[in-house]
Length: 239
Image 1: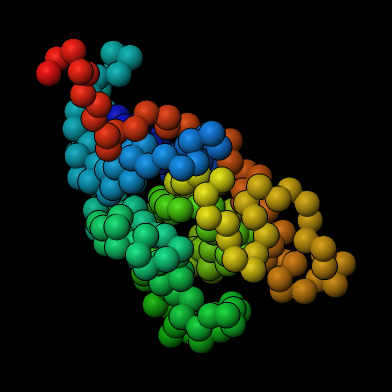
Image 2: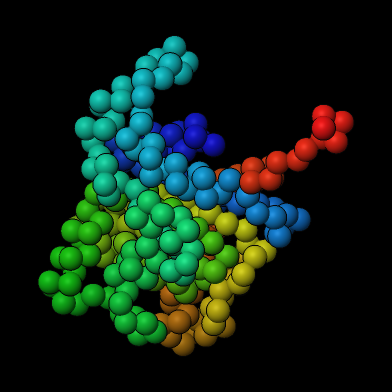
């Protein structure tokens, strides 16, 4: 898990150097294990926060990855942002994790609009200026409209940059969780691939939902964790 976390961060840096649109990754357990805990998803999410400080020299394919070169390009405090749909989930993650609402500066639910106030927009851009990798836990509770809001805010946060027109403003996203667990409330589910029913009316709900669908459809890698790490089993023969 730790090597996976370090590889994702290093890969994000290489993507930024090449000015390519980063890939999105879904990390979670399979449907058959929807009631199992301790699969290590939280461990990996937490390790992403730590590994930005621990990109040691590693030999891979006969080459060395220089930690100093990588760390010189990032702000260790803000390179990775961690969020969750609820305060309890964010608290359990620790490592300065916040709710997704606070992460994208959406302070007046349920009302949502682009930030028009220049001062508020500057605060958002300053908040995310060094952020290149987002980790969202309990992704099953982040519906399509909510992901559309994340996409909208990140595009505003990186407005004027080379990646501002990319999905999520060009940031990478690791979505952690099991799609068979708690569903999003009053929102379209992440596995719903149909256009919003009010698409023809071009309502805000339809626009956000369809934008969120596009983000979820862009995920190209899924890593299934099926080994429970929080339980230890005692072999009776060893007692």
